[in-house]
Length: 18
Image (cartoon, rainbow, N blue to C red; front, side):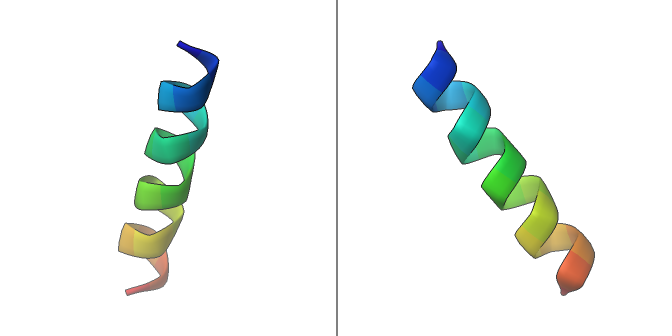
């Protein structure tokens, strides 16, 4: 799940940045 959390965080960050 750790990997999923990291991936989600990156996706969310990218979404916010966009």
